[in-house]
Length: 234
Image 1 (cartoon, helix red, strand yellow):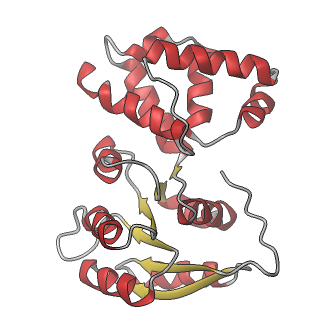
Image 2: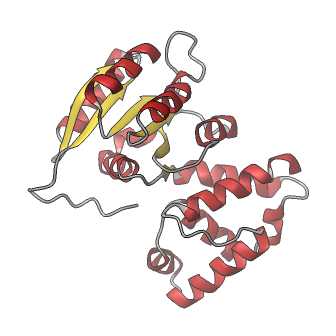
């Protein structure tokens, strides 16, 4: 994740909330409004409202539920793509109660830049939520480590999965990369040197056949590419 320290001169992060449940919507609004450097510019309750509000307010980032009226299926994801097509600089963070791969791939099928996918429990950890909103608003990406871990574990259990070629240490590095950790943060978490982490990362990319990519989100993107390409192995 990006450093989220906000100076007094930094512009406020402008957030639009989209959630059909009134209590959840207003509760999230109040939580965010209590945070320094965050300005909730509007709220929406359904697909059409969030599209109108995004155009009206031009927020830095939209925080929305994955399921909204009228069908309560994937309106949040469909709205995310519609907003990004019209306003590419607006970030979108989708909240979901589901760890289902279908939702992740649907949201990130065109790339990870400016998108986030978080479990709804993250709303309770407002500091982590704001960090994710800031990162996505800046053009980065945020993928819930809990969801990544679940997907990786499912893949590893499938017969013929390329994940089986990774040792436990390499798999842990992959999970931490997907969580957006830097090499130093991974080294601290695993109690090894940065050099050792760099070697493991090189091994992981080599085993998975993922080439180096100089983009900001290359680690998250590499994990998603790998998981997507291995989807047919199970």
